[in-house]
Length: 227
Image 1 (cartoon, rainbow, N blue to C red):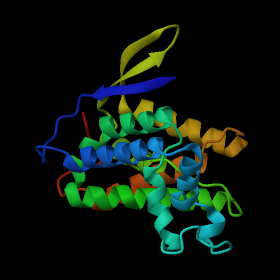
Image 2 (cartoon, one colour):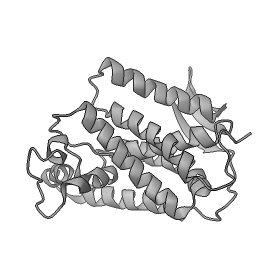
Image 3 (cartoon, one colour):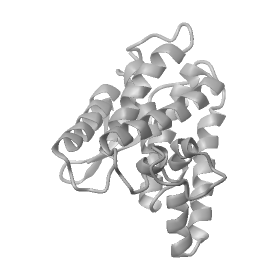
Image 4 (cartoon, rainbow, N blue to C red):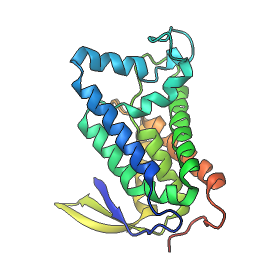
């Protein structure tokens, strides 16, 4: 129903959010490598580096013997199913990631992003305990960024491309946009939607982002700011 375009939230602590752009660049590079593989190789990569609950729980051997079971709690976040999956995640990271990097600092933002990926994957595992399909995509980690944003900058205006009758750009407070997003994820998670979407990973990442941003933010960065 909407896509973020940009926000009105200047940087206050960093001149250039190179971690955010670096994560986007690495993720794009990984997908480019994936896309050059034959279909069988593409599928094999998702199995080998995606997060499979029964593999993480050590009920089934890791497809790559040299890769620790826990490593896929991170590697899955750099894989994507198709261009739409990739670009939608990277758009949200582009719009919201730079301000969270600004609020946390470069190194802590990197730790934050990876921790959100891990906690989102664990949330997916809890609700798919015997799952044998691979979880892939940056959605959980990006949801963590969105959770941090709604905590730190709920009043910032975000320009979104909203579909009412036609697609039109609208400025809306981050709280309403991101609040609607997480409410929709929770709704679909609770009703048990059959769509191939990791709803609980999104919800888990969002909650993780709120919790981690509370303790990792710089001194002087207020909660519920952005007025």
